[in-house]
Length: 291
Ligand SMILES: Nc1ncnc2c1ncn2[C@@H]1O[C@H](COP(=O)(O)OP(=O)(O)O)[C@@H](O)[C@H]1O
Ligand SMILES: N[C@@H](CCOP(=O)(O)O)C(=O)O
Image 1 (tube, rainbow, N blue to C red):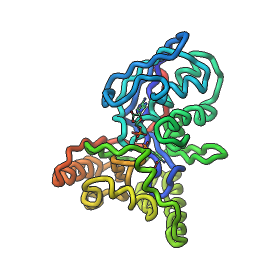
Image 2: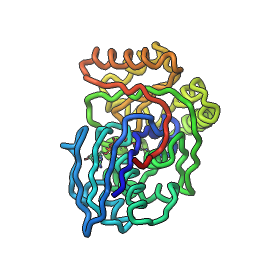
Image 3: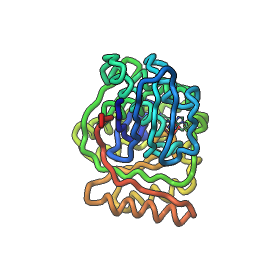
Image 4: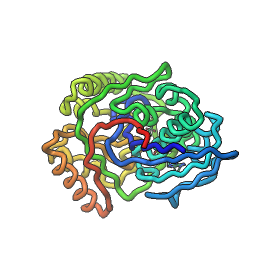
């Protein structure tokens, strides 16, 4: 038997669509695997009523198949599905690491990234690895077709999750297929600023580098109260705010001293537009760990 905890993650960070991601210190999924003749899945925890236990439909079924590692898989969800906090990726990453250990497959964490991404293809139609990379490796990650670069960073964050469901599949449909060259240049500048900020653990640079004008505005439309909540967080001291993953969560970057104030400003702003929400006061954290 093997048990692995894998963290929530936030992808894109505004300017790094389908490339950048960070592991969050909390919340997390816990996945336990035992060898079996065929794969069966049991799901408990946050939002488990919305998650299929059929191995053809649950992300961990695709991971078990990719590793040729049939197992009884128990998932205790800490990351709500359709949250924009890498819920499916947390399960995929945890299952990949746990099954790799259970069956002695010998893959490194980096080699497990494309295997765990097979799970993402089940739910969003594409094996994007910007969530599974930080869930496995921790820190700030840059996921490209050629491989993943990861760095540790000390950055305080607030992830604010409203009681709205936005599926990654639907939010990918609103992404424009073409972009204006001025906006592309702006995005490159932001992405470079953000990456330098992560390397320096500098919340000012990371926040400034989240600004992006191509994907984020289209997705903001799917989130009731997005602009009010963003403004409230900035006024409370956040250095940058953007859509987390495909939404509906918002991710704010701030200094340590401002984190509690930013979290409560975001909750109040959601409440003002009639939306219940919860805020995770978190930071860039570690990747999946064995228990
Ligand atoms: N193990 C799993 N954990 C979470 N969601 C899963 C899992 N397996 C399948 N799903 C499905 O994936 C969808 C959620 O994935 P996604 O929209 O990517 O959420 P998130 O943005 O939080 O990653 C839901 O439809 C859910 O039923
Ligand atoms: N790059 C993907 C990330 C989706 O993240 P999730 O946490 O919403 O699953 C996208 O932006 O579509």
